[in-house]
Length: 239
Image (cartoon, rainbow, N blue to C red; front, side, top):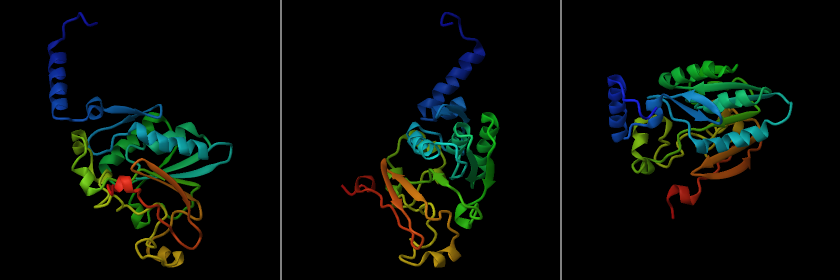
């Protein structure tokens, strides 16, 4: 009712909210929850806010997981769990495991699993240390840090409140190894079985899709070598 005067509590609360927004504190953090792919997720300091552009990744997942076949899905760098939880909610034929390294984000992940009522496996650990590498998966999806150090300096102010560990991908934005990329990429053309001893592979001859800077490319990795999808020139700032 717009004609009803605000109570003192409401007035004070509104003042706090306005002051927070004046310093670019994220609206999503103020509200405490946000929608992603038709599902609601709790958010707050320490976890990356789900964004609409990530729903394009969900579109690809939904297409891949169509039909009645049972799939095993792994969501890396899960954060709020928006991708993995949404997959589990939309595809009953998918067995989903979510990996998250940081305790702050894990708190929201567990809360969102309960809130959305899905049966998934939550794993705390670092995939680069071999976490979740003891199983094979039909689909591995991830929204890892991919922003370069240079780009970090020009991001909108709201992003300064979100965890840098979920955003900064090193100097060129590609510090996070490609999914299924053990040490082969860092060691040039070493054979995959040699690379496996240094880092367990997650992918075994399956399709890898990488989206960097809005660009989408597909490639196949054969059984012997791990290939990298290069970041497009416009996303690297080479133009």
